[in-house]
Amino acid sequence: MKADLHVHSHYSDGSDSVEELMQQAVKANVTDISIVDHDTVAGWPEMKRLGKKYGINVIPGIEISAYDYKRDRKVHVLGYHYRTEATHIHALCAPLLNRRHENSLWQIEQIRSLGYRIDQDEIAETAKPSQAIYKQHIMRHITNESYTSADYRLVYRSLFKGEGVAKRDIAYVDVFDAVEAIVLDGGIAVVAHPGQLNSYDIIPELVEIGLGGIELAHPDHTKTDYQRVKALADQYKLLMTGGTDYHGEYGIEIGIGDLTILEIPFSNDDRFVQF
Image (cartoon, rainbow, N blue to C red; front, side, top):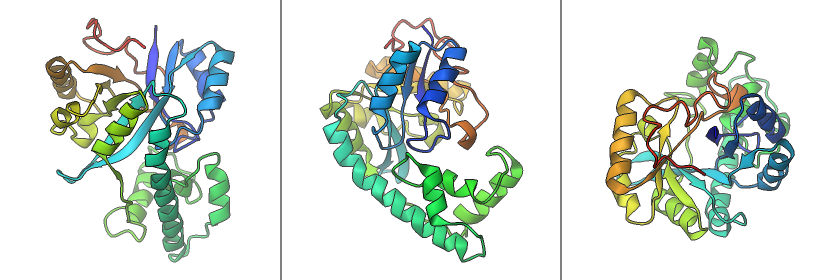
């Protein structure tokens, strides 16, 4: 088995279609995949159908953009193996998607005020089938530079960070509500890339309401992160997951299957999640 359990498609902020993801997975000999689009499960019917077509086991997945209001920091929560009607997840995330989309429309207008000739309707067309416009979609209409280039980063920071005219974030869902929604839908709630967002401190509290796992393998994780994740997983009997956090052209240069459970340090741990 070779699994990549953290992949994004064009149903949120990834650049690739589901079929393109499946084709790449086949080339990389990935047998199990979870497409964890942000705050939506809209792509599941297509993912299920194309998984069968390409002979890949597709695990229902989502990444919920949540917030730890006690510590004033973002926390991302992955959900796996939930009932695919996802009633509680959808009820929680639909308003969040609306807030994101409305904020993006505001950001477009702020950027236009600087003289950038970008069109809201054209950006919305680029974003499809995503139900919300993301900053990556806006940036695609501003620059042809690659996501990892210095020029791209400079433009991005000047618009969306610091004193940028489009620097405005949305209200995220409470992380406890995110975990609860996944659990109520019969799924496994997993804290995503705790090393990236420094989400370690909240994990004992989330365990009390049903947290089932913690992400071990992630491109941003260091050796220290691996050790901390392992220790927490051992202490609280959590499953460990991992993947590339692949976004295609909208993310770092990495391929599906480049970071999988077969390549993770300590992979001889027989408690590593085997979906």
